[in-house]
Length: 299
Ligand SMILES: NC(=O)C1=CN([C@@H]2O[C@H](COP(=O)(O)OP(=O)(O)OC[C@H]3O[C@@H](n4cnc5c(N)ncnc54)[C@H](OP(=O)(O)O)[C@@H]3O)[C@@H](O)[C@H]2O)[C@@H](O)CC1
Ligand SMILES: [K+]
Image (cartoon, rainbow, N blue to C red):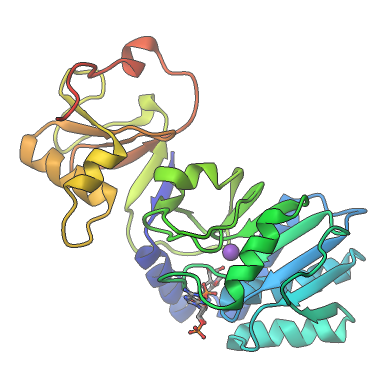
């Protein structure tokens, strides 16, 4: 069972960890090292796309690590701005002789085997702006293997939504899984998903990724094996959402009011009793669980 968290929890946990335990620069290095360790880079031509925040900073730190391991890479900068830690690792990458380019539309990316997406992370909000749009389109058009760092750029980490989102072959999420990656269309934008543990102290637990056997509901005493399950589609949950509620918010509210489990169907179904909320891990499920609640779909 793994924690799945909201962007707010991730950002608070980052800040808490930085304030009390680990300097932010060290966390950024660990994030980049986590990405480095998740991919076989040897013999590959690599381009790293960087934005203006700390997600871009992860990319600069990765460029330095790749240079240390004699893996050639080119930085494509989509913004002229840097975070403080990002600038530190950018300067290091420059010192190490990493090639750099300002990204421009129509860039030929066909020579690269791996594209790394460090454009936008948990600081992203609203529709994708400016040159970031062209960069995301260029990454999605390319034939190369795409690695997204932390969150696929353009995706809202809480809802999984986004009009223009990087499609990755691999997403290395930093610290903890983010809820948006399991909701709606997002699951089809994320290829393989791995977590880079960088020693973030979690300030609270939100949701969990679990097998059906691991899903227990101590506060309500309800059980997935019982018949007390209301089934909903994501569209049905969204249709009753109010005041910006996300799908987990809606499901939790309905579960608490009805004192039943609510299961929102999807590649990773969400199951909640209002107190504990799980996303189902992929896998073969026993027939009685797979068919649970049929005929009980919410109208
Ligand atoms: N120390 C830590 O906490 C650690 C954080 N880590 C990493 O940092 C990431 C979070 O970094 P972050 O907070 O700097 O935000 P991030 O996602 O890079 O981007 C923000 C920038 O994007 C821009 N922007 C926003 N919306 C936009 C839009 N719609 N369209 C276009 N641009 C838009 C906005 O620019 P502005 O418009 O304000 O100039 C802003 O500057 C996190 O995901 C993880 O990867 C790890 O290294 C571990 C340690
Ligand atoms: K990203």
